[in-house]
Length: 201
Image (cartoon, rainbow, N blue to C red; front, top):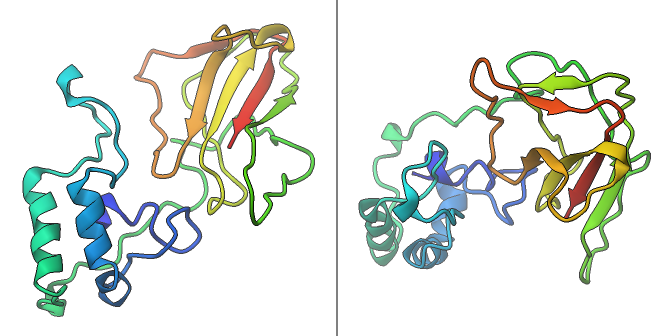
């Protein structure tokens, strides 16, 4: 269950505040895992199931939630470690179906996150140099430091301005989100002269 629902974020270099990649790392967090799964705070999934099934759903079944409770109440026993599956492997590099046609840097210099205090949403405008309309099937955001990025949303802004919801969303990044190309035969049009607006938090 940890490999299926948790280690996408709870592993070294990702935004989870502690790692859950093996028994020794996980056992000490058993009580907390029981609490946050019982309260449906983890894994984070806020889509309402009454509106249908979602292909990327990451919620736990009632049985899985109960397993966390039982494991914690039993003192987080190790069980038969010979049956532990091999460590999950994660994609390194681009998650896109192929190498990207265009790579755009969000900012010329890294944005420094202070160790303490509140950080307001940051916005960066980038000119990708589109001299003609382009059609995109997939896009990916690659944070420089995944451990501090809550989300990134990228908009295409014709004329360089986004007013309310007029900007067309190109892609987004949140921890655990995998790249999902549009179905075959579908694409988003990015008008010539558009700026890319990055919302970062």
